[in-house]
Image 1: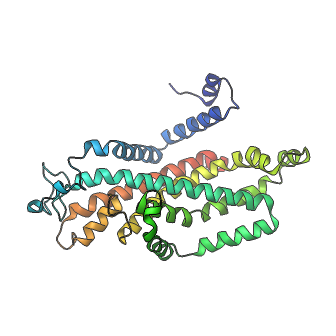
Image 2: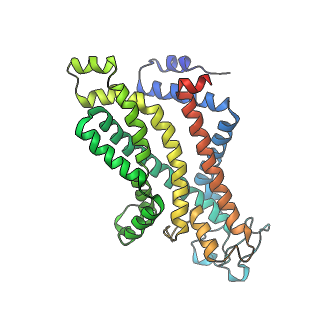
Length: 315
């Protein structure tokens, strides 16, 4: 039985409460995803990865970081009943690495994506609302980050910050999150600023300003709620790009050597010469997982964008 948005709001007792608005929006998005096969694929794939991230340590046959897990007699073994995804150059179980890697890749993608969205939304709202010198200065900064080549800049930042890994929460993984957050916010700023330039001229904003409302109150009460659908849709896309960015930085050897992500497993595989040895089981599973995970987020982001844009819903 379908549950309408109005029913959810009535059950909560108030359609204007923040929890009611959030649940109403969530119901609309889930219904939109359910009507689109591509969106359903994205949601199911993300749910599987989340389940792997939560249950991975319990399901893993061994701890790849434990010294007792090294079994050089069984190194580079193909998939079997004992090792579902084979073994690496040290005889460690690749299925265990795959399960543990899901957690790190998911955490890096979510934290970096949300941080980038928060920075981008804040800068975009301030630039679009205040205008003038604030707009020109923040737009110049945004343009600078947009044209900055991501790969060289991200690799340089991660390499320079490696010596400070102990002072950063999360160590080397925290550095990757920081680098991705710093380099990924500019696109959100550009989209949010364009929307705010239109919103600040609306009658409800002018009315609030004439009644003496503060800038902070107007931005929190009128501007932010109207740009949140765009921010959410863009955040989903940034999460996908952050997962790719983490894999790329790990491939360059900048990942955390004390943990496993899908990007780290790929890096170890190429370092061990898995391609030359025909050890496809070393690189294909994490590569396919990254591809499907990124495609899933892009699919969900497209559905969210279509469900929040009237013009897209009419197409």
